[in-house]
Length: 288
Image (cartoon, rainbow, N blue to C red; front, side, top):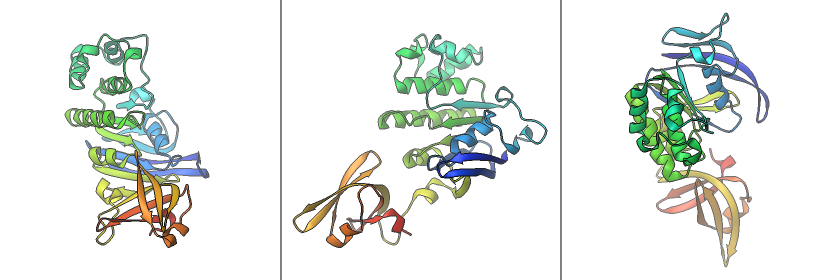
């Protein structure tokens, strides 16, 4: 069991705030941290890793990492950390990057085999693609067989196809090594594929705690789906209006009548609902 009860003052997106987290995370679970930028997600990871200070208590399997008397340094915490920017050593080969953490060549070979990097073991990281670099970073994080794996938006810089491939690698390693994994992500599809628990942070506090389906499935009555996006433009065409909306990696067109168009402003967040294959659009701030 990972037990967290911490407080830290932060300068958030809306000014000063307190990061206040009190929760327990079951062993071997996969937890996703979601929420707007500046809500405290990455800071929480850094506190767990021992990279940022905080007041309170952190313990893993009854071993105290943080209390009012001590704070273990990162090297003394049983963690692996995967960063967004890879953080690889360019003066070392792929295999040497792994062996720098732990001289276990058998484990390094096993990890490279699991992630299909066998043939790249002697390559320099500078010659690799973004997806290959992130797989090396993931393998390196597993070299000490950590009990807690922390990932800070590790796939956000990759294209959708590569993200899907690496999600499979992350899940494979999570299950084989039996780690407890915590990942920051803004991608609902990614969270749905990987996490069995989702924590949504807002202004330093956990405002939602549940499964991905409970957090992100947002339908009402007989609606078939409900998605959030940004209104890019409204075009008048004869007696109708066409809204151009960005949803994730796609741009869609939605037909509006005049009354709907008058309630919308370009640039605002909107919610797209469909019912019986007839999409409707409403300002996100008006959706309850």
